[in-house]
Image 1 (cartoon, rainbow, N blue to C red):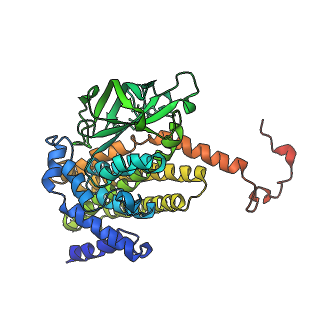
Image 2 (spheres, rainbow, N blue to C red):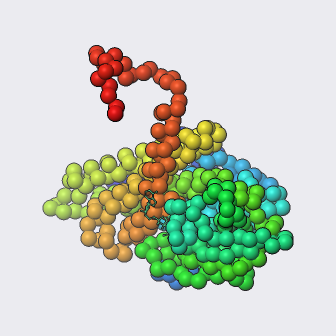
Image 3 (cartoon, helix red, strand yellow):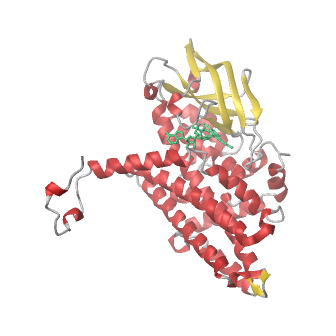
Amino acid sequence: MLSEVIKAVFGSVIMFEAMLSDRQRALRDEVRAFVSWVPRQLILDMDAERVQYPREFVTEAGRRRLLGLRFPAEYGGKGLGWEDEILAIEEVGVLGTALACAYVMPSIVGEALNVFGTSQQKERWLTPIIAGRKIAAEALTEPRGGSDFFGTTTQARREGDHYILRGQKRFIVGAAECDFFLVYARTDPNSPPHKSISAFIVERGPGVDAEYLYGLLGTRGGGTGRLVLRDVPVPAENLIGSENGAAEIFYRMMIPERMTSAAGAIGMGRAGLQIATRYSDQRKAFGEKIRRFEAVSFKIADSITMLDAARGLVYAAARCVDAGDNQNRSRRLVSEAKKFATETAWQVINNSMQIMGGIGYTNIYPIERLLRDARLIMIWTGTNEVMDLIIQHEYYNEVLTSSQESRDVETDAPEAKRAEEKVYD
Ligand SMILES: Cc1cc2nc3c(=O)[nH]c(=O)nc-3n(C[C@H](O)[C@H](O)[C@H](O)COP(=O)(O)OP(=O)(O)OC[C@H]3O[C@@H](n4cnc5c(N)ncnc54)[C@H](O)[C@@H]3O)c2cc1C
């Protein structure tokens, strides 16, 4: 009976229900219907690496018009905002990182095409990825490093109406199956890093090889591989934005890259916590339901508090980006959201496993898969250490360069005027 009540209540508390508009509730329900459609066998086959890429999942999402929600209707999107998209991604996040990643890839690669592409480029590549007819992948990371993006060594040399691309990219989701890659390559070896990199669409073809597929702790079935480009001729019309102008594209793409990681993390944490909450209402020890032990129920309390706080931060970041707030502040908030939501998901799923005891560590429940998945999200789309670099950088700038708008509390001390005591050096 109590678990029935919990089930009913969960329907309303897992979302910030009162904050949603009717349109957002309808979208959320549409996405939930899609998530319920996903065959259980697909999840199992991906985790067992019997599936290399969930193409039919993407096709179905496209058929339901649930991909690339932010993009204009003329290219198949719905012209919605980040507030709407994170709602959808949280729902898909309960499926784990591999499916969530396949779901959000059109949003990530699509951002570059939508903001910097020509109308021909949008028709050729944005429309089919939003429709789920084509699969895109994003190729930033190289074997020599992912954090140091501007150290990119992949080269693109102009020859007539083509560029010749040569180099390697590592850990590329969809390397095995995608139809095209968004690749960053250095087009000017002599200029500073921020002025020497360009972005290209590289279609699968001769010289474009997924050379090696990685064995992964989790997030399996996404075809994550090393991409090798061997003197690939890429038509000049595949250049996105201006030559040597990819720094701007990179910074722009980091918004969907990190917002999608953050929103998906909340769904994953939510999934783990629901299982543990239901379990703790049924499992008994010492003749008592384990939820009666504070050690258990307070873990639930901590977990849901952290999840709600993370969701609040992700929503705040979404609102700032949608409102076109100051770019630096948005960058800080997006980075905070990515860091906090991914660390929260990890802690919440870990708490959930602890609440389940030994059975949580087995494959009787999907907590162990969620835990394996969750480990990655603190590493990809910029490690959480890189998020810290950005957060502190932007916050120092904000505090040190902004004029004092609010009360200067530093003077609210009895001896505040003793300048000779304020020694800094
Ligand atoms: C399963 C999986 C899927 C992925 N999917 C994609 C994809 O589809 N496309 C893509 O382009 N990439 C993808 N990545 C790559 C991912 O984004 C990178 O792994 C990540 O950005 C870190 O880069 P790295 O692995 O080269 O680590 P490194 O950059 O070598 O970093 C190693 C360590 O040093 C730390 N570090 C580095 N620089 C600093 C610094 N300045 N200050 C403090 N600490 C620092 C890092 O935080 C990290 O702890 C994927 C990775 C994995 C594992």
